Image (cartoon, rainbow, N blue to C red; front, side, top):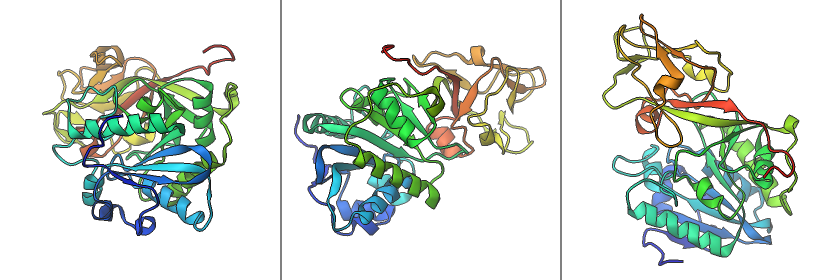
Length: 347
């Protein structure tokens, strides 16, 4: 384990004021990204990542709700909380201009060296040395999506962790450098997608899930039953290239998106389904990249002579968003296909 970066704060108990703090107040309250260790009856700790994206508040609300419910009592299992991008949280944005994405900086990242990558490496090394029961990275998204888990391996314990949260899970290889992918090297690890930020029901569900994880003596090692989990895998990410103008109204633009686009998330769509429009006679103003970063746009999308952009093959979208800042900073969404659950002895 290397020297702790100066930007990281470490607390051995819950800091005063943390349980009621607003996201925007955490930078001043904590002084920077922080690890908070909370004692419990069992070890090793459940690790929970909070606010890797500064505008996704369910992570903080869920942890606050959980800790308030255990006030004055010892947790059933130790808990370590990583509070991530407090500077972005101060301004209510995913990340600040000039910052890397805090969920793209973990070991395996393709981002250039940075203080943020040093922070993520130190946290990973520290938690590997301390031991981790399971890792949960809590996120929101901006489109209409069900609650679901994201996993980067298909080990039985990882899928059991996913099935405990929701009946839908997504297996992914990209993007690289995500927290759950880094921790999967030494513990069952999952990212949970909890719908839109600011909805109390999403906060409550995440808190309930974390509480259930704290109560586990172990994660089952047997395969998840097919009726308990629908598993998908991402086949490509769909991005809007720089310089492409986007509109949500029927006006002249390089890319015209429907205002109901995010209603298509987790819907099985047939080949030929219309997903957007462009100016007649031009190529698709979208870029589809596979897990290796290869351009597979022609494999998944086609453009009719009138400018209608259609799926070239059947697919299931996820995380389609109408948020232009997310489209610019991250992506328009993903395309997926169904994946059979591993059988006993398959892995």
